[in-house]
Amino acid sequence: MKELTRVRWKTLGWALFFLGSILVVIPMGFKFLFKEEGVVRWDTIAMIAIFIFAMGIALTVWSVDLFNRIGLGTPMPLDPPKHFVTEGPYRIMRNPLMAGVFLILLAEALFFRSKILLGYLGILSIIGNVWLIFFEEPELERRFGKAYREYKRKIPRWFPKLKRGSL
Image 1 (cartoon, helix red, strand yellow):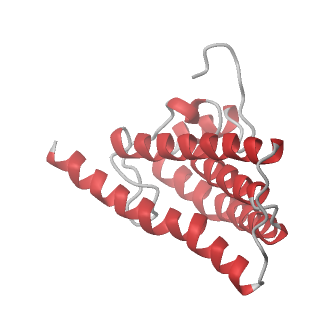
Image 2 (cartoon, rainbow, N blue to C red; image 1 turned 180 degrees about the vertical axis):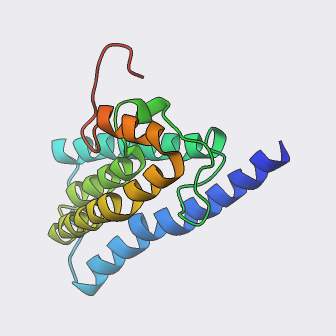
């Protein structure tokens, strides 16, 4: 139980710093730097953005919690999960945490009608793909071997493989 508490505090610290920076500090910094006004109209697009935002938050929190509870680690490369996590959203896609972050950024871009934030999302998507393909996936293959290779063969990287009872 003591180990789980330690991991949870580290996860909370990671979430506050890393996700807070990526999802709040950097986007708002870009909006300020490029002097882009935040246009918010309470219309259908705003409502869709709020729905996407909620989905992104739920997916991100769920993914981090699974790393924490089942994997006994964090999403941080310095403290990766010790156990291979294939439950919850990991049953239908390999990167639900990153997908959740991308959904949150998409929601911010839609909500604020921001081309700057949409561009930021595009750049992070490219960086995320490069990171996954050339660094994270080879590291997971090294750590988890055949189990990860089989998982990679069956489960898509980005677009969920939905089937009856998959979650």
